Image: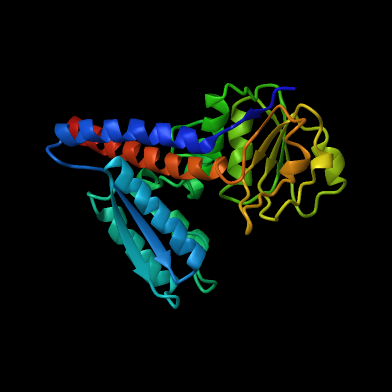
Length: 286
């Protein structure tokens, strides 16, 4: 069986090249204006700081600007909401990203939902989730939207397929399930309370690892010819799926690293560019 590697790193570079061209054209049209992505980092978690830096570097590569808001570990919900309000009101900011997770004293959901939907380029608000679920225009959650782009690019149709998602987080498993359902897949969501998990995974035409536990999904659970999408990234370059036991008999898979991860950032960038274009179109129509 010929196994297809779903190379997110290469596709992300292609998307960045397209965004660079679009941004240069927009810059000429607006006499120098460019999209701006604001990132908010609360506390000093090293992994979160690395992710924010990676997103800033991606902005530079395509000709965007990034605005970093760094807040102390003891920031309160009220203080964080105030910072989000300022960014919502800033006409020159086109996308807002609140780096997850935030310190435990902060009401994360309240802060996510404070981001105005027009700038919710990471797709984290309840309003955006609801619009996405109903098939209305919005910015999808970045990682699930990136996965859908990856599947589309490699011409892997999900229509009529049985998709099993292991993981139900509000920014990955749940929005991914609705995106797949809207694309005519039959979707099963599994989680920590799911019984007979190996038997359910064996039924899947497409398996999505989104549980956040290294190699939790064993290769022996996955049937021959399935498509394997690993959205996990754990220490030691390990995903959520035991890929070594399945790569020789699946039909396609995402490597870890280099599969889903780069698509998350590429989607975030492209949705910020789209937000900037929407802002320009709205000003032209007024």
